[in-house]
Length: 356
Image (cartoon, rainbow, N blue to C red; front, side, top):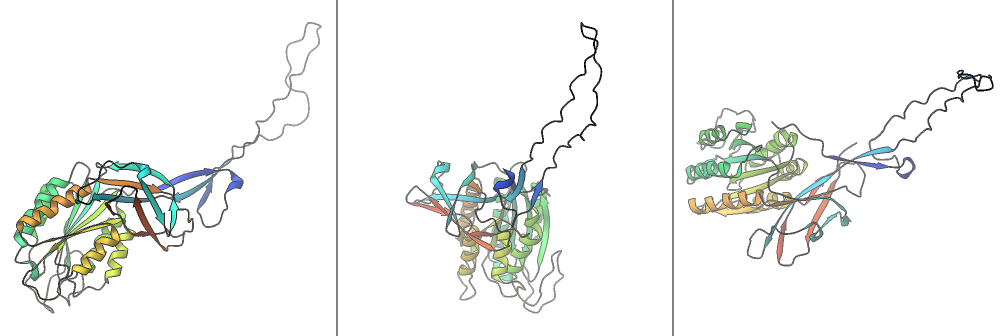
């Protein structure tokens, strides 16, 4: 498990130039000032040429230097993917090609990078409800190949299966053989509504059939929130939820608080007549900066994983210190614009400000 880094910047300002309200502030302690010496003769020096002694001047204390005030403010990182009108990745943009707005106010970019090598912390969520049985073996094979292709040194991934409960099959690890084994341990549930199951390490409401929202919430809130760097969920599902304790908005908010992008490989069941969760998948991906890729056979499944792998390795990172300094825990809307025409921008729609 990667230790979380403190994503914060230090802005040093003159003592009188920044109000104290609404921010956590720490002042460096001033250097101690020597106490005033008592009046009287200083140390004696050798006699002068006329035989008289002289008194050396007293050593003056160093001037008091006013210490700066340090204001600690969290930087907001936005991971951005840009595609052209042919759906190809645009990888040659510079800092001046981007504008970022928070709640309508343009923000000054403090950091810009084309990050293809920043470590990724990945959550692979596999729907194991009965509706996935027709494509589940292909799902396992494609997921194994995806993990092998997308993961590089310092990347970590976990595997969670979900149906009437959520099972943590592999915790964060760099070991691809362990992840492969976890993917192939997943099994399609044969238990219907009201059936009896043995809860996994992340137990859930057992009254429904597919607890998708619960799985996303727990993956983000309990696992990814404590990780650092780029974080993403890749979820293989038909997008149906009919038993979760948490709501769709709870799941989206948990992903936004964890700074996690949700990509959905949406398994199309051509025989289904209801319960197909296109809307759910699209909202979760759109609000977090991810994509929905519908698949209906083995070939399209492999292509979907290839597209997500490319996207994870072709992101820009934009960082800014928000002009709204209030630490009030409110949701702030983010909008990213690109100067190049005929492009589509994928980025999260907002974040939650820190609390006091």
